[in-house]
View 1 (tube, rainbow, N blue to C red):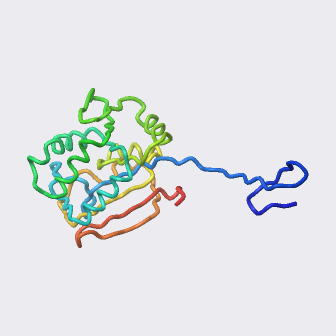
View 2 (view 1 turned 90 degrees about the vertical axis):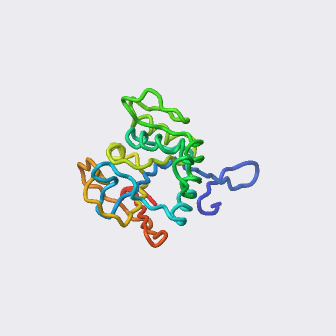
View 3 (view 1 turned 90 degrees about the horizontal axis):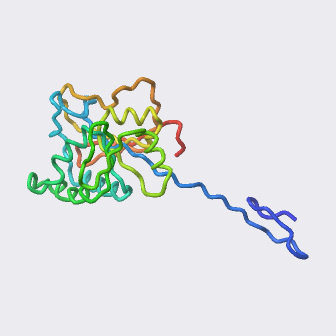
Length: 217
């Protein structure tokens, strides 16, 4: 006697009874790279300026929803040092609604920073010094919510080459400064990406969500 599709049958006693076999795929934490860039393709200015991103109400709301998806912020050293100089005291440096809303989230979120030179970082931050890609691969395979890599290009390039980034969220701002660090640094090989979504915020910025083309939706 055949059971319904997707089941097997086993004999127990005088009659056949369907025995449903279910398999569950283990959930893998995603590593998401969120980066702000300009229309000219750079992530900072010629002198390292980062005063040009405009975070309107719609983009700020999207950021809050994204933060709810994750339980870890990830940084390279350069971005970490820039943000660690601002977010711990953001309320005394800015009255922008987005800054005031995000500052306590940043302070309370567990954070990782990859660095060969830092020995400690503060603000609930763990420094990863050795076998960074191996440690992050193990972290992705463990329990938890997604991991959010903020900004940067060199460190993101290392993780891209290691195949660890699952999704790129690129926020394009309508600014041209001519120079700075490129969005994709050290891109030694061709990278094929699949567009997942494009969205406009506040009539100013555009979000482009991509995943590596070899990943399943």
